[in-house]
Length: 69
Image 1 (cartoon, helix red, strand yellow):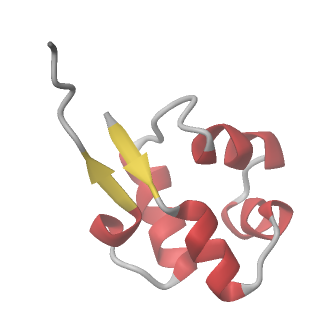
Image 2 (cartoon, rainbow, N blue to C red):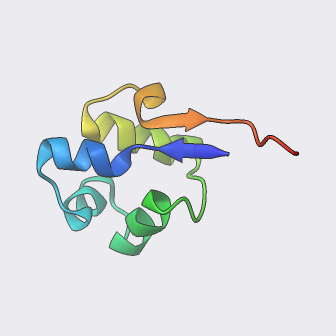
Image 3 (tube, one colour):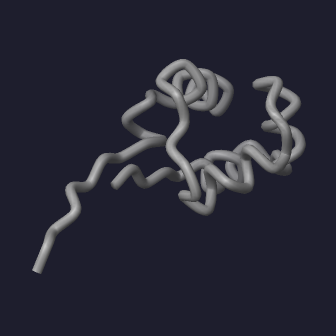
């Protein structure tokens, strides 16, 4: 499962979801869906988000393997 810290990065920059959406040319709904882990971004979009937030991609997105019981 891919986890992200987009909301934290936005808060550090004092950006709204719309601010980030405008910065990377996507809809606010896309940012909402990403923050809620509704879907995983493409690699290009992930890099755009990280770059816009001034972070490394691995600081914004973390992969965690699903553990089956």
